[in-house]
Image 1 (cartoon, helix red, strand yellow):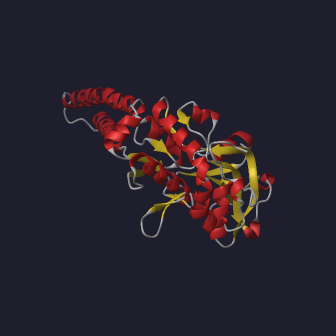
Image 2 (cartoon, helix red, strand yellow; image 1 turned 90 degrees about the vertical axis):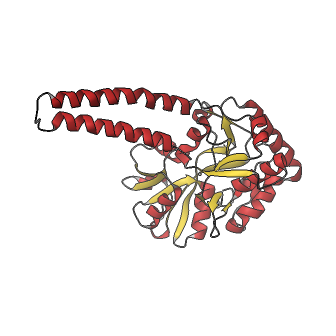
Image 3 (spheres, helix red, strand yellow; image 1 turned 30 degrees about the vertical axis):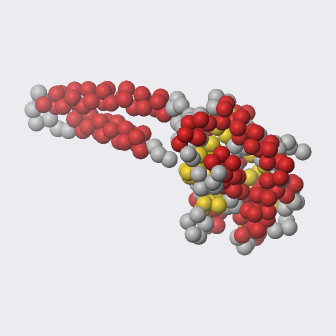
Length: 321
């Protein structure tokens, strides 16, 4: 579609380590050659008691994480900053530049939200997320808002609340120019790279289950795999693969649009209505100044040049043409 066209889980990790350690203790106690018949059963029983005692703690922690209460708009105002989840490796939408600063189309919008709420673009804390962790970070209240190229789907809408859209997108496929993939049928018997938790993963699993998928957690890992020849092609949002191909000689987008035309939108924890309504009011109000067209000019046009028409991608006021 050249014309149309991303935390803190240390607690869970520590608890997992406790469980693993308990399991190993029990196994060691039950399999080691006994030196005294009275000692081995006692050790085994002690390990079992430790494990049973630890299990409810882990379950309790998981439940607490899953049901953590999101901050209300008033809570955020009292704290003096927004906490927003963004990508760190999805250029030009959310990425860390050579100076270590986070940049991109989503980040530009995030800074505007901070400016309008607190009077300063710096009143925002960026938390780097992966595609598969976006829902979990909202559910566990690690972030207030996700602005990480989040495509609206029915399944996701059951778990989070999406605000009005600010971008249009479909899927695309990028591959080496010397063995360009121009039709999905060409992927038969080949390896397609996808990122876990993305619409591309879901689309190909549901519609082309026979295609071998090589899955990665992070976008940079996926692009490295494509560049190294570990896969024949990579699929994600067409806006993203086009930008990458333009920046990486020897690759091209052979399939410019596949699947449905979807929208990208901010997301909040389900039920955080006050915050959701404020974001919607922001998006509607920004239409008067064509904010997202300015966002495009500042963050995307330097990458796309004249190969992409802003109107084929940008959504103003939450209204999709």
